[in-house]
Length: 272
Image (cartoon, rainbow, N blue to C red; front, side, top):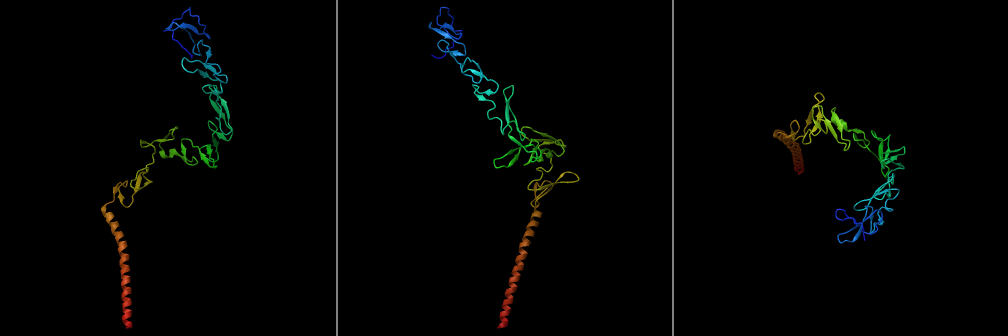
């Protein structure tokens, strides 16, 4: 029989019960009057002879019994897992880092001089990355810089706060996103006035005197932000100019051919 656990609210201890229960179990009678053993959480069996904690926790772990299901283990420092069968430091540190275990049973690494990171996973690139000491080496030998949240670019050479254009710059340390508190009171991802200012392919330039954006529109658009189609007169002028550019060469070509034909005919008449 498997483990039998009884609730004392439903079963009455009977001193006449002569069944010998082991490991602190107590003899009771069930509803039919049959003697049964009431076992402690760590034990089961007809006489509570089975200890669930026997050899259950490994590497010096302490077994803790459970009223239901399997017991739990409180592992010794340096071990983890359901049965304390796993080493906390196993395969944790990279690049020959030395793994240590804290008092809270958490692993940490002592890295070689050329490596850094929680697991010594980043190569220190003091002379390659502009604003970072960390980079990774790919299998093909290429170097990739690991940039701090404020910087970006192949070598972390670009400061994201430049976008704030003298406004207050706030960096989200988790995502690396930029939030600018601009001098004009606007809160946005950028204070650069030319960002998305001109429409329909217009080119934005900042006026050096007023520091305001000015749009240079393409031929078919007009307005301060190139937001309106160009007036028809401008379009007709452009169309006329294009037509003239085509018609004039054609007229010259026809005139030249006509002159040649007339010259040939005159020469033939003189010979006759």
